[in-house]
Image (cartoon, rainbow over all chains, first blue to last red; front, side, top):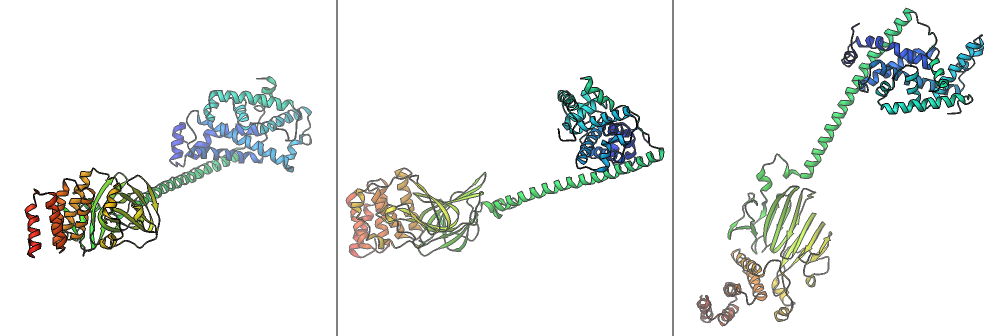
Length: 192
Length: 379
């Protein structure tokens, strides 16, 4: 595959170069998969769909010229993946509320695990994901990009098209909101 | 950041995630790459179609605006039309009329009459009528023994046509002018502005009454403004007169031809009583008004309308008996009376002239008329 820069890759994509598909995949698959895996959790049947969905969103956004070259293509892709993953978390929560049996199983890890500590850790992660899905979307997005993907505030601001001060504000409020939610008793989705 | 909050989030980053085998990964790579290429092409085509749609919509919008503009302006103001066509002004469609320019009277031909060079005066004799077409596509019917001046101005929004009615009556059928143009009929004491209609305006001169304007609307509406600043919209079937005392009850028949002056004279108040009434104020100076009456009389006489000329002289003499131009008017009067075969009245007028102007420039002529009337021979 050609060793394109971000700009060359985008030009090839705009020119309908057939090599651009593979090049874009190779450039972004790691960050996309990382973000989705960390936010959504278990690599289940929906994982592949989410990866593909993230790539589709990336291509659609590029076509709409949403990418303003204020950050690297990778950082920008991580923000889109985070957005897709958080939406998936919310969708999963809604389905749980509707009592989908396949997803209800995720809330009953004891039936599949023997070790108490593994169970506790897994339940904690599920709780975090559950609270993330209930949080204000913009704050959760900044929180994940910063805490999980390790992006600094300036990068987040460039990716989301907001000011650094706004990114800082969302991060602070997001942390506070998540803390309050984790301190409160777990609910099945009623509390927001 | 509270460690309690940070710690669980950092937990998300930990853990070992199963790696897919090479075949599965390769299949996914090819599948997603193909999907990227397909989606990219589809979105590009969709975007292109959307852009084309916008261009088409913009072109259609511009085309519609141009079409509306052209329709609004009408065929006469089409940019491609020759400038002379727009300025042609007036064309004789039927009948007969004469045009007077700088005092020279000539028959109006079938060709267009250019209004840009001065303000021509169109005249019909007592035995003539004419149908004219103005450049605004307005049909104008000039009744017998009528006199109009035509004027046309190009304005930033279109044009303005003005018909100055000096004698007789006109009937107009005006197409919808929209915002592009304006047409008005003006008389000495009134202003009739047109709003897409069919109407007639008549300038009534019945000495010893002061002349006045009558307006009759057949279709649409017109705005009438009198010299005193009052204005009123007239609808279909409505009638208006600048002389309220002389206005007949509405509706009345269209005044296409003026009634005989003699028939109305009997019903009018006596000149002596009329002289005691205040005369209506004239817009121009008195000297200009006297000039206009004398010139009008001269033009009417040259146009073969001695009765109208006599009326104008009578009006002048009644309104300005002591004016300087009254001297000329009295001379003209006995000449006209003689030409109308009203010899006793001509002799009387000549005698009155000699009494008033014993040293007047036409005293010898007046004496000849008196002698000729006595002897029965031409002067």
